[in-house]
Length: 434
Image 1 (tube, rainbow, N blue to C red):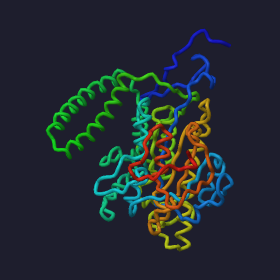
Image 2: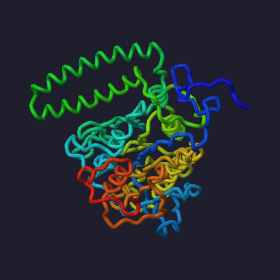
Image 3: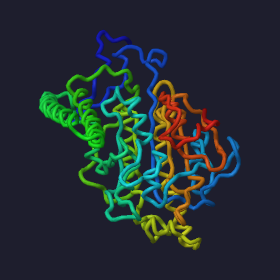
Image 4: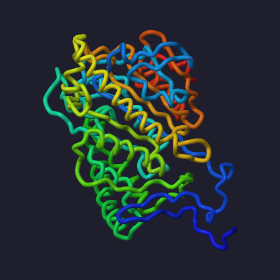
């Protein structure tokens, strides 16, 4: 049965304080894969703290004929969509420096690091979406020092400049409202216009000051201007929304989280996972980073059977059977959350493959084993096909002591950034992934 009327392909689902892209319908015309634009490629970077017990993580076999380990067993149904990488090494010492290096490949020195992988990709692919990237988490910054570095630096793996960290949003409702509030209403446009005038004033003052400042201060003011310009982009997207080149062909769920931060650890992380998937599904952003916990996390996991101590404590297991067992149970729980995310993404049809097929998911920890802060042979997973940019390889064994930055460079180039190095920390790309 044909329809005698049509609606615009730019139509949106509206709700109180929210707006989501409407899926393709018959009344919009053909929804076949052939007539639909190719889905965009997304990047998700997921950080797990405190490492793993190596013998419970390491897989056996090479290539696609590999066998998942005890910790990785929840991924069995997704095995053909994974690449497990061995022999990738991190840099730095201790939780803070190694967390900071997870997406930058650099050691924090003083208050300086480098631009992280997620933000480099966001600069390349984030112009068409309301948010170039999102950064989510579950724990607030901790205070104190770890050696020469503030523990608060381990709150994030995302850096927009060598001195600017991006703090994760840990409140599910706040994250939801930021991403899906209704920016098309007259009130939203009025507030955006007011804010734009303030931004203009800030820019004028900052540029004037920059002309008079020292070279060092000019650099700092330049970084500040970059952050202000990112606000400008969000305001401009509100006042003059661009024609979207991609809209989902299946209907997104639209459920606003409850107020506050969930006390239930399992519920909290699942909500943040759901928000990241929803942000990709609706093309609200194409780059997302998730801190499953603080890089120096001492979260209690007594809700798991057989676990009594905090995560950081059990990571310094000293090969004691009870601590190793608890450490492994927590690591497997984290992988269960990853499996939940990947299965959810794999169930979302985008016409040209699933959302998982059109995404690249980088998952891992900044250390191999918390017992001794081992930084060699990190636990690293790459999932999805990146819209054809990657083909799952099973178990890839890199040359010993390959810098983690080589993986970063490989991903960066796959997303169209033609750098020949990654923060001067890489020695090349991962040949098996090119």
